[in-house]
Image 1 (cartoon, rainbow, N blue to C red):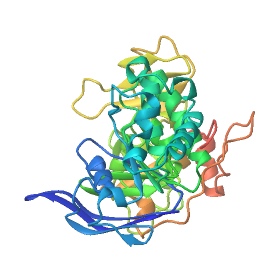
Image 2 (spheres, rainbow, N blue to C red):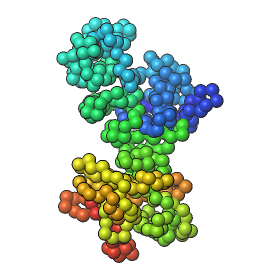
Image 3 (cartoon, rainbow, N blue to C red):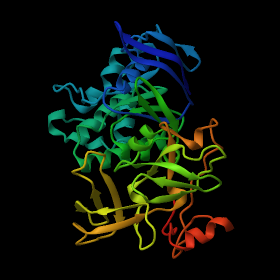
Image 4 (cartoon, one colour):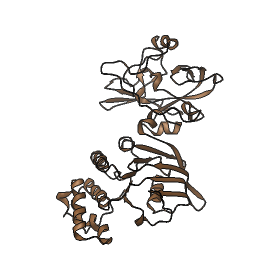
Length: 405
């Protein structure tokens, strides 16, 4: 078993600093996913852990041993690359066995290891085929099998599914999840651009931005309690809507006067002195719903996308400001060109000041607890509003409805 500890890790190419101040502890057996925009240093950090890139500053430990100057072959890791990198003239078995042959293992050991990996990845019928006779998903499984046969303590995945079509990505993602479940004591670090992969596979997600770590947490924690506007918009698809405004009334429930003349009641506390403070209201598209009461947003629908299970509404697509998106469950025909009023549950709204969530203004908030969905047939899973807020909610300013995450 091997955990990883990154302390002050930095990477520079000449005068260009790519990564800096990377502090991260990864527990043994944990599945950690690196996400972030293109060029943020995800793959570079993974290659530094693998030993394929030199560490400019800081210290990397694997299993308590400093690895800065240890060659890749001695780090107890195996890496699965974005490209399959299979030898075209070798069979599936020979591709998986190549590293073991180089290591001088016996024929019996190699056969046992490749048979085990083939069975685990459902490749047994294809062990004697060449890579050209395999589908893309099967080739990627061979690349994963090549890592498995080495029986490393740490697995590194560098966007392994990006070359697959949508259906194969889903199937292979499930296989990777099952693989991790079958090896609970192995540590896995995974780089991806795909939020679905990150949210479904990770024990924790590491969001990288600007060459450093923006936030680390469980997938739902990052989704429900983003620390910054960047994380709020990066996690979740479509991205979170951001509406500028100012604090009108402070208290356990904050009233925000939005720039468009509307107001929102937000279940995030503020304190004396916060009056008139400029803030940004964050509301996820999937938390918005049509209302006949007082809305937090009202405009004419520019464009709709009917996806069957949900309908996406787009507003302000021709404006200079960022467009607003709503994601309504079910089918909503004939909304294009109509003016609609949208609201959201006060507990699903977010408040940011100078880019930082007000939940984090005094440091780390209490330990995260996922919100529970409402029981079947219930109109909401939100706790009852305090007496002084109940009248505001009943008047239709914001009426909780539907399941709360």
